[in-house]
Image (cartoon, rainbow, N blue to C red; front, side, top):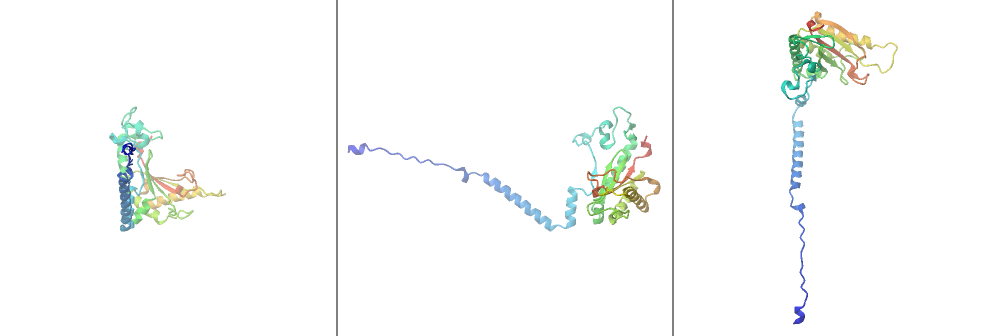
Length: 281
């Protein structure tokens, strides 16, 4: 009896480790994100298969306009879209604005142009109309869409520059000639119609890419001039009065548009709607 009373008492303790791996909901969030992404992917694949090439091009053009119009602004989100009303601060961006140091009616430009504020506003409105009309041709036809891909516009102190340029495997002229391709004819036809909304004088300038090899008789000067003159003739054939053409010049390969002087992108013609004579010094 005594031996039984002195027996050791053994106590067993169980250590229970609770793992969050089977009970946490974090994996559900990750799985839901994965399923959502897969659903969006398959929805995109279905939409691409269900739409036509023209519809897909229209959607792409909505997010990436066919005609890149360079409109430089102050970039802010306040009044006037971030622009200042003073010419000294905005002249290099958009060529308009009042002046801090000179009368509003007349502001001198560094490049020799003297701007009348009222006339400048009218011309800026005309340039905007031209750019909007060019954009309006997008979607009119496949030929118009192809033509507009060659066009870039920019407003400068001299006027509105409408640049038409080569694309890869889509030249404006037959190689080393001034014979226009079909896309050039389509472009000039569009421009002739658009430029009827304004009465500004016109300047045409031709540029070509540099030759990969040094040749004794370099044709770049003659070729750039002949291409510019061919565009002038085409504009006049499309109804543009010859009296509006103020100058036709060839710049050879002297002002490349890219760092690579032999790039196809340097083959271009600039059609400038000049500011009125009253705005020049």
